[in-house]
Length: 154
Image 1 (cartoon, rainbow, N blue to C red):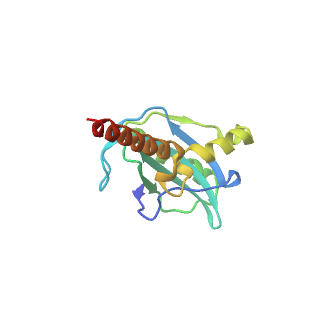
Image 2: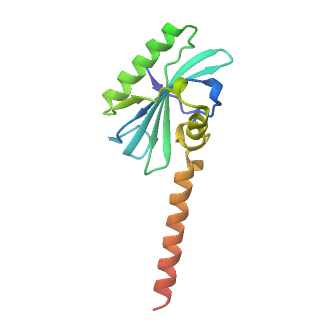
Image 3: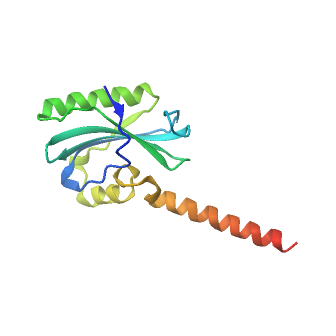
């Protein structure tokens, strides 16, 4: 059973900590308690930590630039437990309407893994620091400035 853990805003990790990663192929509209409803991306990530491993479900609310992190609550000690929690996490996000794809983290090149770590919102400590979100905020500021100048010209 996966539940929201408000302590998490992201899952910063290095290549060696990531055991598995699944990405959503679509962005269905979801409503998460306490968050602005809207289109979301889903990530299921298995991470190795100091006290074992864990599987996390990270939902990234695209328009809001916000997230929700769901945890299973158990520390995984074996490959079988990892697969069980991965299967449970995938069933959970698929029940929300996500179509998931295995990113095959272990088979990906180190360059591809580094690119994912630098660009996917799941690996950022704060969703507002995601490059695409920062670019969108800058674009909105530029549009507002341009519009303000345009209206001031009248």
